[in-house]
Length: 238
Length: 238
Image 1 (cartoon, chains in turn blue, yellow):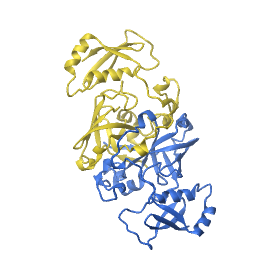
Image 2 (image 1 turned 30 degrees about the horizontal axis):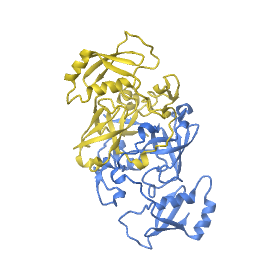
Image 3 (image 1 turned 90 degrees about the vertical axis):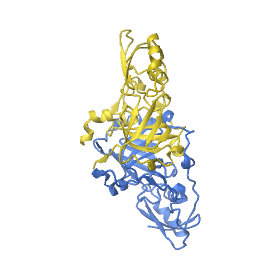
Image 4 (image 1 turned 180 degrees about the horizontal axis):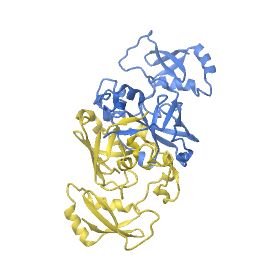
């Protein structure tokens, strides 16, 4: 017997491309997102008291994985892999999918704890998320410290957070451009790009190539950079 | 657009009745549960490396709520309430459903962090769960302390754990009977009953009545008790 769930809301996020999204929430503090509720769930009273919690859990659908996989058509078997290669292990070692947070799961459900910055009617402003723009949301739950926070839990290969190992710089003309591009609709733009790229989105197996151009999108902007070792230089934004 | 998910496994739990289940995982340490995977998800390699984590997140379906509500038939509107009365507030005050962990949610998805006691092939032994027996499981994720543990999060009315306020005693013949009933199939039976009833499952609005008999089931046993103030006496087990 299968279960059918409805999206209750939708995320609007600065991350408009999967490439470069931090691998866990909370790593890039400059990332903000907005959760907009969909009818009939857009009732302000459903959030009464939520503003007293500092953090919330968001259960969401890995929608790009879900639409690639035929899960939503009910097959439920393809689209997942019993083992995956976590980036944290250099992309070489395989672990079981249930020992990872990979999106290639039997049910492509994601789970992130984020800071609750503001409840504005039925719109939540969230801090530090790792959501792709337009992510469908299944549930919102308050973070309950006495049951959810287990500081002495042991975490195997994921015990320590990934460290921001890259140094990020911008070409002079990009620095200039950023001053006009950073608007209310694109808050913390420069800091956000620095933070994202400092976490080294480059696949672990790739060697240095001074000509190789990497790219992703942030908000409505295309960002292009080059990388030699841990030195990242942003060369274009449009 | 709705999403369809498959149960990947099933919980076998000591809690065979909703009444008396602790309101969060981790409160009753003597509770254990087993997660048995369903085909085609019962592949041992899907758990490779999981044994190195001390805790896991279980996403599950509130199946008793789900079958009451017509959610699984796709309506998605009934079966949830915009506001609920959390037992922690004495059952009088209403908060928004998203400010609670109530099971009357738009999507009846539950989320519990539990201790991972043992990985035995494709069977997980879990400690401290709050699962009803036969709960369908949607996902298993490792608990990642650096992102999931936020000790300084603030939790409003749920900031402090409920305290085990009741004193639990057993009639002499029940004490005798427990010695034969506590078997490998019913581990920690006496301790489990003590722990469950110490958390006061009685509805907050009920006054003392020396004749009133309360009952629930634990494993395959019916348990009956009386309560005056915070004194609970177990009077029957069969």
